[in-house]
Amino acid sequence: MKDYIGGQAVIEGVMMASRKKVAVAVRKPNGKIKIKVENRSSAAEKFRKTPFLRGLASLFEMLIIGTKALTWSSNENLEEDEQIGGWGIFFTILLSLGLAVGLFIALPLWVSKLLSEDRIIFNVIDGALRVGIFVVYLMFISRFKDVKRVFQYHGAEHKAVNCYEAGKPLTAKNAKKFSTIHPRCGTSFIFIVLLVSIILFTFVWSEAWLMKLLYRILLIPVIAMISYEILRFNARKPNKVLGFLTTPGLWLQKITTQEPDLKMLEVAVRALKAAM
Image (cartoon, rainbow, N blue to C red; front, side):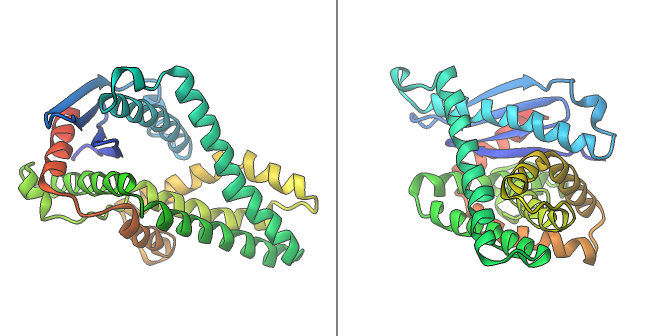
């Protein structure tokens, strides 16, 4: 059985993670490819066979791995006096979390309160607003040149993984033949999170606005665990019921992945080979 490969696009490159290794490959300004390989921490290994807990452990681990990969790739494409340090990373993460809570949790909640107090209608409006804001946000940032390049590397990551999972020789030309869409993509996961939250918050209810906000923050780990299991199960055994939750995420990948060129595919293939 082939090892599951996780990955993510970074600045001018791709990060790939196998069960034991994490590799980041970036295209330097001089045109050369630089690769960084590290052993994957075994701390989350004991949770990988435990339903629900494995999702939380994997997501937390990938958040750390992804942040480190993004930082390294950014610094590899910046002058020495422009590179991002520890405090820069800390404040960037803090600002990102604040914006995410404000834009995707607090704003929809506030608007929904103005429109309805009925439990079911309120949660449908709240969920629909979160989905709508997320889609508009993706469409907006995809217009920026730098973001489009990241989305192209995202497409390269998916093509390389699809090529590997199909059992074909790992080359940029072979990878180019495959789709930029992948069922285990983080975009699909986020969309499942949005849909699962609509269902869950219909049952977890409070009349107080602040309690609603608190529930939405505190239950993020629970929603993430459920969503991870849905995504994982559907990737192994696709079915129509779960397809209802996962298919919209595949559509959204049409925004978050773009067709890469051969040089980008070469970077993705090098990262995947290094991870294995």
